Amino acid sequence: MTEAKAASIPLAVEFTGGLELLFSNQRKHKIAIPSKKPDGEPSNVGDLISWLCDNLIKDPRKEMFVLDDSVRPGILVLINDADWELEGEDKYELQPNDEIVFVSTLHGG
Amino acid sequence: MAPHICQLCNTSRAQILRPKNHARICAPCFIDIFEREIAETITSTNLFQPGERIAIGASGGKDSTVLASVLKTLNDRHAWGLDLVLLSIDEGITGYRDHSLDAVKRNSVEYDLPLKIVSYEELYGWSMDQVVAQIGKKGNCTYCGVFRRQALDRGAAMLGVGHVVTGHNADDVAETVLMNLLRGDLPRLGRATSILTSTPSATMSRKETEADGGEVTITNVKRSKPLMYAYEKEIVMYAHYKKLDYFSTECIYSPEAFRGSARTLIKNLERIRPESILDVVRSGIDMAKLVPNAEGHPKGAAEAVIRNEVEDEAEGGCGGSNAKEVVSEMAQMEQKLRQDEQAEEAGTETEIKLPSKVLDGQRHDRDLKPDLPPEAALTTYVQGQNHDRHSQTDGQQLPSDIRTVPIRTKQEKKSSRKATRDAPVPKQRLGQCERCGYLSSQAVCKACMLLEGLNKARPRTGIEVG
Image 1 (cartoon, chains in turn red, green):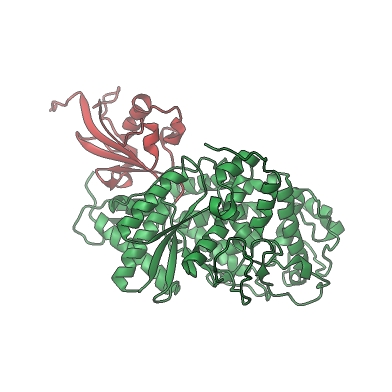
Image 2 (image 1 turned 90 degrees about the vertical axis):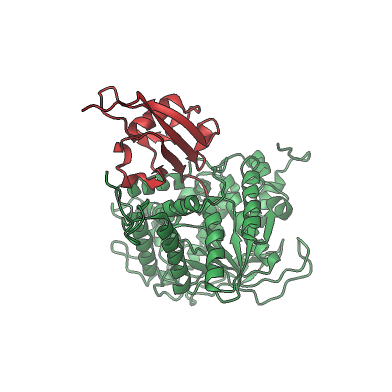
């Protein structure tokens, strides 16, 4: 049985801890990414990260956000206010209107 | 994926995965246990006395903001009766410190805590922007670290406070342990894990002719790190779930410092085995116990340790490690100070049996030339003519382990250093800096020495910054 899925998934992403500098100094963004990968699999958080790098990052310093296809160590990801490690990290399949927060810990205290 | 249930309350959805033990808990339970663990750290180490006046070193960043919030909460909850104030240092770094100070001011209002801001400009006549304009971006972090340490103590003295707390977290301590391990700096390694440190009190009274004017009485300024066992990740999570207001940007002058490499190591390690951070801290504490103190007995790291933090601040700071590579007068001066100090300590070296090197103990290098290149500090110069042999190594020796062996109360006044080769290890001689009257064990304190270098080179027309 096939469900009628929208072609794109609306999401609310937020960047804090200094990351907002990479994204036009804006903390919150409302975006929509394709609901499926090119190979037909549902989009997951890993796809979101790639999408952000390609479409939303305005600063050339991408290495402050990603490292080797995943977020740089030291950046925390919250999916609907929960640690992404509890949700499957970058394998978590995105649902419409999910809230993803990226918090950087890489700065002085 | 089925949602996890909080392992503590078994009711709410789990939101946090704790690095130290992989526990899955909800946000309210997390906030509760985080605060409880800090309280436990504080009470088990008797960090504070009831009614004590405490200055919280507040930069406006995540660690100090969380520290202020937690201390205020715990103080109220447990009625410790602490008198908390916020102490902030303005290094004069435009685009960085001015913004973070705004965050501190907001914190001061929100937590209803008095705030004192001390600036380098008013204390030393130099802001960091001016220092960098003068000396460039190599070694500038050393200045900042040395100045900050003194500024914190002075600020504390101005407030009549004898105890300063800082927001150093487990990741910071783990990085420091690793850094010093990688550099073979055993003494510093031994000191990095103390939760409480103390500069000794002066028994003599201040002279009237004091550089900065005003009545300041020197008391025993203690420094502690209540968040020492808290993961940086959890500090950020705490701030997130409590919606605390903090400022988050790297200092604009922080270069590719050695600490950055240690930090990368720690962060990568955390990914595969998060418990490692606290394990490194605990290893550091255990290693500290192996390092002897003044009497030649190994000391525990948890005790209050008498130490001169000036060098630590300089080396452990954001880019201070680069100072060694800078062949400058200041670096050489630092080396000389350290070398002179090490030359004193030969008497205690016989306590330690090093595997492949025979220390004849008594022989130490009184004839050390003061203008050895900085690298010499990392090789075994203590044995005088033997040092080359050691650095060419029988393969297994780390060159610097000779000088790292003794830990003891620190630098003596140079003037009082006589023929003390066979004398018992001397106690730390306390005095005052000739220039500023600040508490120091040297004739001229480190900050004044740095300032002297700066002022000599200061152009007459002054430096316009910004």
